[in-house]
Length: 477
Ligand SMILES: [Zn+2]
Image (tube, rainbow, N blue to C red; front, side):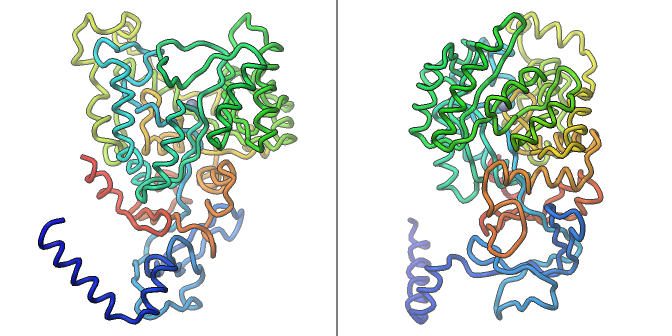
């Protein structure tokens, strides 16, 4: 501590001790002093009608919402700090239901998809992602995302969750451990691999048991089914994982991207499908299965295109990514242009030369619309960390595609708030109401008029603490 700081601290202590003891005790009990947001339009994404309240006051005390109501009905305690909410909209903090902290979104983060080890060894990328975690947390908050679910990574994921719990400027993090996988993925192997190949129900139970020791929020299965694979044999492995998870009251998240495989996953107990079906139009049987089993579905529309764009060197940062993504990652997205030709894998060199058009994912978008119309609970999620899908502002790419698929702005916002809280099984998140956690985003434009307005946050509040998005990003430059 420097000399001048010491003087200040001493002066502060003197002021505190001069105050009445009652004041000090109350402050210690209830955390920071209350403040209010005044004149704001509050948005209630959980409601089908009357889903806004204009000219409202919201009082925040400590980490909770203490009161919400019309400005003329809510009395603000004297001396309470105020944030002017006139001309602004207040939404619950958003939740991304599908992320991976062991990946960064850059070109070096998935050597199984594109082997750039000759440029950046994978071990170096893994170490970078670990060291950069505090910045990655801030990127999420800057985008208005106050909760994320990491649906698969190394056992290090549990340290990520611990770190987030101890860090104010971090989203709430839920996590799974390593993926229970149908296939090997040697390029990602290490002493703490994100993906573990499992061949028998016994092995599945053993891995689930190891993960349960760390109290995961989900168990995750990577249900990869290739032509010629024995589906009943694979299903028995998924069922073993499912039964073991459920016996411990832990839910099962499954990656299954083909209709037949997704149905199989639901039949044996999947609670959360983290992808839409990509391969063919879904049918009524699938929708009925999802509803019967109360399965939540995260469509993750953008992620395949993120790979295609980045690996053909056609990826371009959106204006939101330019403002809100990790500057270190943005700076590397076009590294292919700087690489010596002999360091670029032949397959990637061909993608770059061809620059094939990357159309919107029509099948999964049409399936999303059918699922939504059919009454399935849709959770917004990006699969952030995969190549081309950056932590934080990729939520705006994802939500734009959901809108393009035919969901209304209200449905999109609900998927990112109300339904995100359902995915996290947290009834204190995802809504603006008395007693809920004060996770909020103050927007400069109406999110129910245009989904794109969700990127115009002037303040992000997590557990009562107020942040300015631009300051968060400036602090990690
Ligand atoms: Zn994923």
